[in-house]
Length: 392
Ligand SMILES: Cc1cc2nc3c(=O)[nH]c(=O)nc-3n(C[C@H](O)[C@H](O)[C@H](O)COP(=O)(O)OP(=O)(O)OC[C@H]3O[C@@H](n4cnc5c(N)ncnc54)[C@H](O)[C@@H]3O)c2cc1C
Image (cartoon, rainbow, N blue to C red; front, side, top):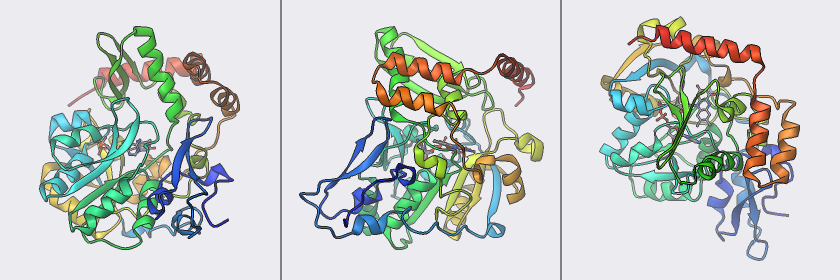
């Protein structure tokens, strides 16, 4: 068989390099019972050229890590208070993206479509960047974004392409060569949650309220960055829960909802080939208290000279403090640690794979994400302490 065939789901990240590469356009993505999408080949059209196999970033040897000693690390905060508030951490992604748009370029990132599904799109206006702000804790569907971005690069237009480390690794393999006007940006990633589970979660509220969803924020900062909230808005109703108490965020944090490949991630540390890597600078108060901001601080790592040049060009528009790789290891476990499947995932899989009932899926997530009473009390105390001592 000379085309891609997913026998072991644990190794397909769903990056979309195969679909975007196929010269016959005969590979589509289909959602499985669990809710993640995998490539499916229309064999009547396939000419067995083998390009889809060659381009797959996880069928090859695991890529080598960048030598970490050479990586520059900063703690940064965007000076634009509105953008900072709307972003997940320190709002640095928007700063990088604005620069590319002002140079006549195109920025690719993850946005909600009009059905509240999460997918990759390209944007070439400053106003358009708003839709990228904020982490969406759902796997983003790549569609033909790789092919679109390549077409712009071939025309000589600057492109900033953002995504998870596996999406950036897929994009680099799809391109197969260096483009001087391309900058890629990924982030430290725990893993990507299930689109079917989130569909059920939001539909649960739409049904209960009998009105359509009008807004979703996974990282609302009304109570600050440390105590971000999940917010779902209807026309007249609103759901808001601080992260410690929202079942979907808790299920994400307990690693219940992730794509099978996330439990075998090949793109930890720094081997995605991205030019810049972003993250939340959790625990920044301990290592660089002088830059702590209630609305968030970004951890920024420069993988290449191109990344460094883009970062330097926007440096006047941010507060920044130089940090170190040692601090990255000490404050952000997801940088190197691959998450493990929790034992409760068996029960979760049994439900999600066997029903499309919104209520059954939400009931299962709520049940499995429920924390023991002691943890709930600790979370409550942590929240009240954060609110009491919130400064700046
Ligand atoms: C699924 C997921 C897991 C993450 N895990 C961690 C973690 O373990 N540790 C950590 O420190 N940081 C993690 N992050 C990254 C972090 O939350 C911020 O996105 C990052 O610090 C950039 O923040 P910002 O304020 O600069 O910009 P923001 O404006 O908040 O960032 C938006 C950027 O994230 C991209 N994005 C948003 N949702 C998705 C998605 N579903 N798929 C692909 N790209 C997306 C947008 O395209 C844009 O490039 C995760 C993000 C996501 C989406």
